[in-house]
Amino acid sequence: MRLTEQEELTVRELVREKTLKRKQFLHRVGEVAQYSAFVVDGCLRSYAIDQNGFEHILQFAPENWWISDMYSFVKNQPSELNIDALLPTNVLLLSRSCQLSIFDRIPKLERYFRILTENALASSNHRTIDYLSLPAKIRYQKFCTLYPTLIHTIPQKYIASYIGITPEFLSKLRSEY
Amino acid sequence: MRLTEQEELTVRELVREKTLKRKQFLHRVGEVAQYSAFVVDGCLRSYAIDQNGFEHILQFAPENWWISDMYSFVKNQPSELNIDALLPTNVLLLSRSCQLSIFDRIPKLERYFRILTENALASSNHRTIDYLSLPAKIRYQKFCTLYPTLIHTIPQKYIASYIGITPEFLSKLRSEY
DNA sequence: TGCAATTCTTAACCTAACTTAAGAAAAACG
DNA sequence: CGTTTTTCTTAAGTTAGGTTAAGAATTGCA
Image (tube, rainbow over all chains, first blue to last red; front, side, top):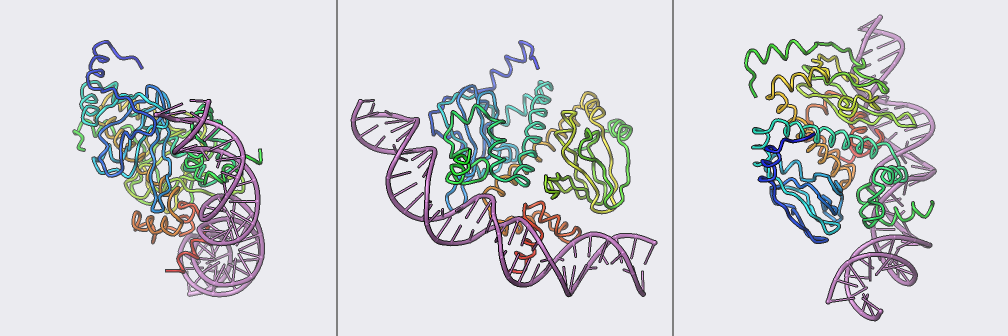
């Protein structure tokens, strides 16, 4: 989807750049998610922490992905997710109010985000089905084919967290070739 | 969100009514999902079937909910889900091509569906986190508070399927009060 | 209403995945 | 670099949840 020069200018004005160090937070549990972030380079993750202090990763956002806490961002409610950087990362930040004003001014961009969200929902549905119907070993194999780059760039304990198992058990699965 | 009389007429022309008996399919694995369905009354479900023949429910759609296989509907690809009726059900069917043409003619409706999809994604994310971080008993309790009506209108084996456990195990959980 | 089909329950046994712990390997960073 | 921190592995013991099977209860529908 191409924007006109004028449209592109409008977007640039509304977006803010930010650089994050490894482990730096973009967003913390309890805050209202102000921004949706577009990852220029690096990698972010969103995750929840359960009663026992264990982390559960909802999403990875490598280069060219958007990430936010959709619930908090859309409903303006305090979030139950953290978002932080797994690698040194540069992002573009778009606030909800800016996004909504862009939607009024450039319908093409409301369409862009509509499609983005449709695709995200389709992926999320796929993940739910996989989680309900496949054993851990197969979920790991699917993860490897779906995110081949991540396997080598982030610690494998995060992959365990994403597919819903402990790092120890993933280690065991991997040792079975 | 209110439509003008003219807008409402446009929508009615593009939508098709359909009545389904209990257990009747709206959509089958392998087909491309032609329609997104709005449930006027009754209840539909979407589900996948695994290699062992077990069903895994992705979504319930009681009154006033939309249901489709988002992936198949959006990408025009064969679907891995079935959609059928848990109760006698009346739906309104909207094809993807009609939907896209409505988006061009009535931007208000592109917005309506954008918001619908944002909310669906937020819910789906919540479900993922719950699945990763909570034991079955708590997932069942949350289901009961989230869908209080469904508990009494559909067989409980479908609830077991939705929360990712066997009917036998749900029965055991329930017997512990 | 009554019969057939579906759903729910219970219980004994089983297993995928978790917990704990401790040492080995790898990566971060001054 | 070398040292500190993080991550990965292995292994023994445990548990949440699955499997199988059979009878009881409920529901659908002729």
